[in-house]
View 1 (cartoon, helix red, strand yellow):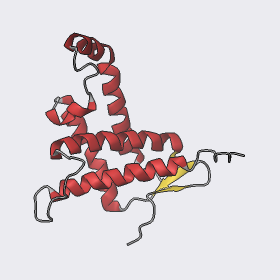
View 2 (view 1 turned 30 degrees about the vertical axis):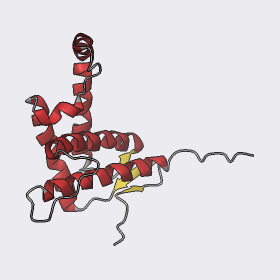
View 3 (view 1 turned 45 degrees about the vertical axis):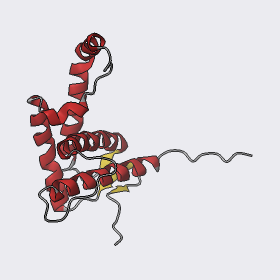
View 4 (view 1 turned 120 degrees about the vertical axis):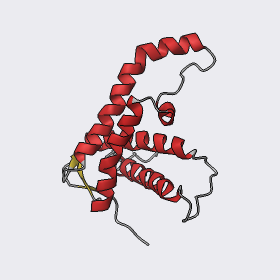
Length: 161
């Protein structure tokens, strides 16, 4: 079954998000849920802030002290921008780039909760994990489509002689 793209160029360098009402409602709810998990330092958010120096706890602690606040604020900003942008009819390319980061943040948290593996078999439809896994796949689709839409703004590569 063919489905129209979720991010259609608007002719001015921006995009019109083509999201159904239910898709917008689901996406509008997710940022607050993930922000709450981030604030409570839930284990599902561990992949948002991976160790920079896993073999050197002291260096890693120094790195975290130096970057934690900035990384946390970047995650908050992208999630809030997604939630606010869902109400807009068009968004700029810069806003769509931020949405890509928000989709990645949501995917990392949900993927951690689901313990998603590369070779994972999707859960059966009657499995309680089926709906969250479908949401994970939907976020992956949106992220991919957003990147493809943004790549359409890149200048064409010159052919080699």
